[in-house]
Length: 220
Image (cartoon, rainbow, N blue to C red; front, side, top):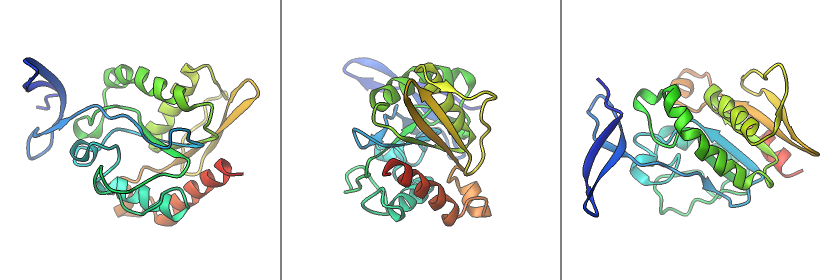
């Protein structure tokens, strides 16, 4: 069975508890909590699910070093939101243009399926992170239905008004979030998981269309 919380090693004389991802080859990757990454004052915010087990857990930077990140950053580069198309390690020269990426869940969950409790535990962190940049954000791109739900939950928790009935996720779906005289556009995009990209559910043209739309909204 999967072990989600375990004690590994010692640091400064105290046992350290961390979330551990469980994979076919065993729970051998420590999953430290990951903050978002990118521009400090982003006009475009990308909301994903969680740090990848063999990506951010290894490199120390969110969405770096895994296949989903390869697709995401290649598309961001094609639409002018990244200075290069690859993201291999934390010390490369990748930089995002007016864009920041954040994860709903701070650690990689087993099977990439967070529990309700894990989502609730991590909610204050994404709310705090989005709250710090929300004055700059003009458009939010939600990767997958989980990212879509997280974006709606987070903005509602921050006092923004979400349309009723609740907007449904879909690739290319759009919704408007409102706070006073400000509005933010929420865009849905299929998650660039291998399941989606290998089967053609998500193509380069499809992800470019959504991220290109985000770039146009973020830079009117």
